Length: 247
Image (cartoon, rainbow, N blue to C red):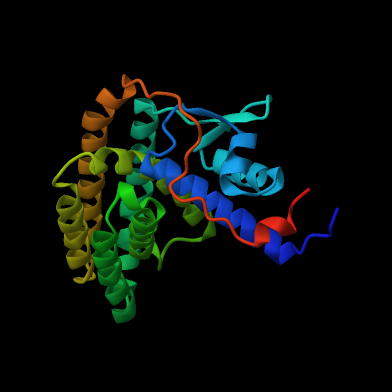
């Protein structure tokens, strides 16, 4: 077996992780869908090593469940999970935003504005990871001055798990893109005032409203039967790096 270049291997794992994650967020891999590791390897044109590592990372993020028989399933939807995600976000984010607000720099505020426009331009669901990254970066920017590494790590996991619900819910509604844009633009406008009480209240209302939307629209999806089909990712990106990890 050829020796692996650690940087090449790490880069490939990241790309495989992003590919699978993007397909989950976009709904190409349905909640509860079972698939084999061999199927993913074939679809992506890589060996089982980066696929297994990617799935371990996604399992840690709560997006997949690994099985002992060399298969995995996309984590099923759960109304209890939605409620827990937002309960924890409501405990953490408004308080951190309030601590952060007086310290926002002009550059940080400009970045928030750019992220809102980027999220609006890239859309949701059909673009998978792109819109999701802009969304999570915006929420991270609102907390940046006060959020330490521990709270950032906890919130990143909550955002990752929550994003698939947001994508599933907003992607099926015609007014979703504009609705998300106006809601997040309103948050940035409040942030520009650098007022701790105002941003705390605005973010609390924003998250509570999101929780209520998730609860209303996820419930019908819980009873939807998805046809189990062969793995089909959004866009299998095959690169020469795949050969570097072949076994």
